[in-house]
Image 1 (cartoon, rainbow, N blue to C red):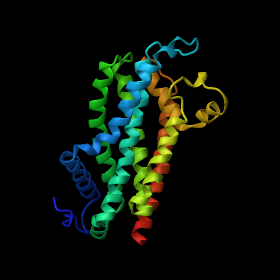
Image 2 (cartoon, rainbow, N blue to C red; image 1 turned 180 degrees about the vertical axis):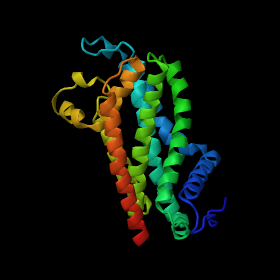
Image 3 (cartoon, rainbow, N blue to C red; image 1 turned 135 degrees about the vertical axis):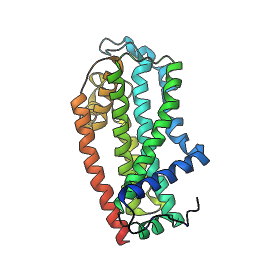
Length: 264
């Protein structure tokens, strides 16, 4: 579809605008599947590398799990969810650079619906990434030990993280409105991931890393996700509570970005 033609009017509904933005982004993915590479390459690389090199860590007395593949898969899944969300900000920055976003914001009265469209699109991209990532992890020894509801909880938690990352990244893109925003979209998410119990359980971390990991909200996502996969309910309320709070905060940030872009 020609980016110059923006098929929304001042009377378009929130849903019609969001649906158009989401569909346009998903069509771009179909034309350029390489757009999914960042959400798959790093998580797969870390999963395969860590799974092979560090699997003996399960022999530590306090590790609590003998399935290191499952332990690392949760991190890879969450990482994929976060990186996919961050790509929403990159996609929006490209739309600002091309002039498409300016035309869209001029013709769309419900501008907040633009953010919703990117959220839907990045959720769709994450579903595709998860469909690729899961069987690869299974081939390398990962196994589901939880029941069906717990597995739904695992992927649901990853979807919440994807929404948070998308709202953060699109908020940054709306404020800066160019690719100069790229570090602000990606680095905070990357740092949160690696200041969490990535290689070891939280109780095995020491020093300043343990202190940071305790207050890092991403730690709750990992702990709950690993609990779901192992068949236990660990930090579930904390994880979904932190997720809900972060959705609200990043949603407000994204809406503030919409107002900033409208003034700009």
